[in-house]
Image 1 (cartoon, rainbow, N blue to C red):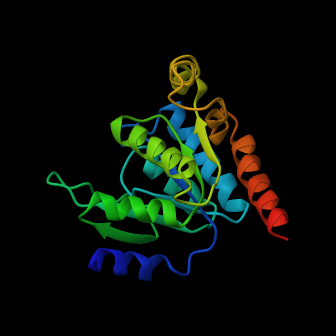
Image 2 (image 1 turned 45 degrees about the vertical axis):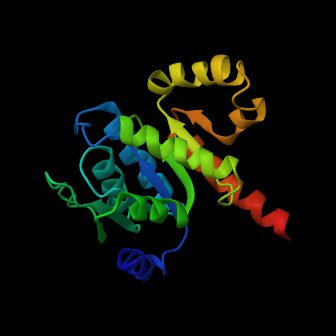
Length: 201
């Protein structure tokens, strides 16, 4: 309960934010690191804060892009036995002991999710986001996979097997987008928010 209270207290005054997930193992010379920096910069210049897990790799790249663009750069760090150290580009740091509390914070303040290439943790975050949206447990927001070379096989499998075996509906494939273009990712998020506002009027 204390972690929930601390998280809400630190993040309450945040403006619109985009949460970026991805591998902690991605190196600085990796094309996906550079793509993440560019995407985070564009999002920041369009008025979005950037939220990450606060660690190295893709998380560092996203916080770096936000910081270099002068935007909000938030890191929700997890305390692990081998201790994940926060990256130096985080401006607002919140430490968590419990994964489930941290995951609530990732979703609660997000106006969109960007999923860069990653491992089990990234897949977990991607699927949890889709599940919460699919079951109407959270308001719908855009979910964007970036890196078609990496994610393309998964998307093909979802269409062929999950839809084919009727474990998800064909319309569930519209719950996310896939692109390699940072500007397109930003436009997907911006246009969704605009459409949402117009629907409420």
